[in-house]
Image (cartoon, rainbow, N blue to C red):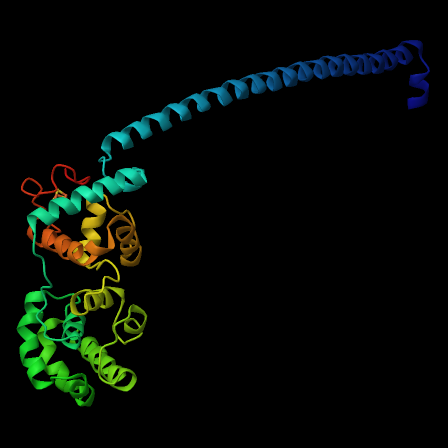
Length: 299
Ligand code: SF4
């Protein structure tokens, strides 16, 4: 019997038709059901996600705000009142400066330059030597140095090694000897052996910056060209609350604005005295310090 003759029988012809209809119908139903389900699910997920996002978006905002507030509170509590002198108004800072320098004038009525010298040139050399060195050490070295080389011309003519030999104990002696030798030659060649009396001319000499120039002008010529900002003055100005700058040049600018010019020279000496006697870098004597009542950094 062939396959064609089987399809022609009524019973056999009905069966496949029913099956095909059922599969399509089932598929259509299944598709309709499946199509309906995901739509519902997708809608639900989106809606849920949107809701979740909306909730989450609101929550962190609240948390962040709380965290910031807490941190700010902690920082404010941990920060000493002195941490930022910039919080002082110009008037408050000026009042503070008036109080500081009036108190220091009482404590140190007759300040003077701690470096021994007999001429502007000797003071220039001594100030170059005092970088990263104590005044006491410089004063121990300079008598023999100035006896051997009494003038700028003598320093200019000397071999740099001879200068090095006499200043070894001051530290950085090679650089200091080179600066002294070159500055001496410049003074001989450009200024006929005399130290110039202006800031502009002084700072053009080798090894001479604003601090050295202000020391020489203030103490050898009686010219108040600016506050002397050495390591003590830099540290104390920031501690007391007179400046929150970090470079000597900017601290000098602040002090020059706060202090009357006729007090620049003595004011520098007085701050240096205070730094040596009370406000020692690693162990400040705040309980005994005359500025203890109003220094912003007092613990
Ligand atoms: S009170 Fe303390 S921190 Fe302030 S200047 Fe005096 S020693 Fe220094």
